[in-house]
Image (cartoon, rainbow, N blue to C red; front, side):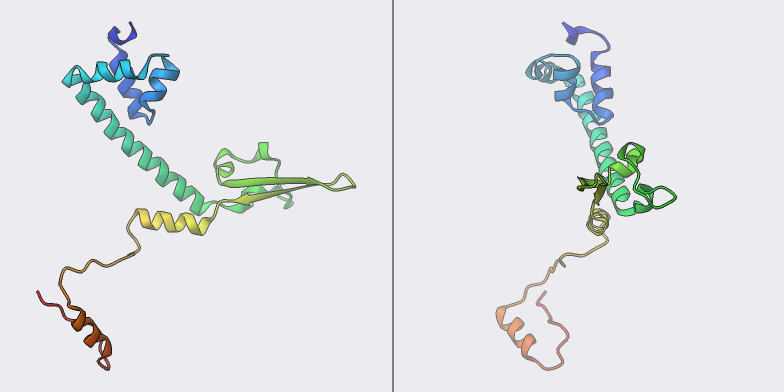
Length: 169
C-alpha cells in the first residue's frame, strides 16, 4: 500500500506545509480513503507530530495568502484594465493579479452590434478595513477591568461636565 512507501509522510507533510489539505492529498492526488490515512497518522506519535507541525506551517501559509489577497484588493490600480487609449482590455490581456480583483463582468451587445464590457471590482474600502482589522489598527471595543454599579453609572451620566466614571477597584 502507498502508506508504506518511505516518502509518503515526507510528501504528505510537504503538501500540507505548502498550504494543501489532507483531503486533497489523499482523495485527489493518491485516491486513498481519508480515514485510512488518518488512522495511519494516529497510530504513530512521531508521524502524528510531523503532521501536526506541517499543519502549523499550513496555517501560516493560509494567513499569508489571506493577507496577500487583502493587500492586493486594497491597492489595485484600475488603470491596469485599460489600454493606452483608455479602452478596456479584453479579459485575456488583463494580468492574473488584476483579474483576481474583478468581482464580476457584464458584457452587453446593442442593436448595432457594439459590445460594452463592464468590470465590477472588489471593494477597496472593505478590503482596507479588513486589512486594518488583521493588524489590530482599529479598536472595536474597550475592555474595562473595574466594576461600576448602576447607581454610579447613572450619577456619572447626570453630573454636569463629567468626562468619565470612576470605578471601585
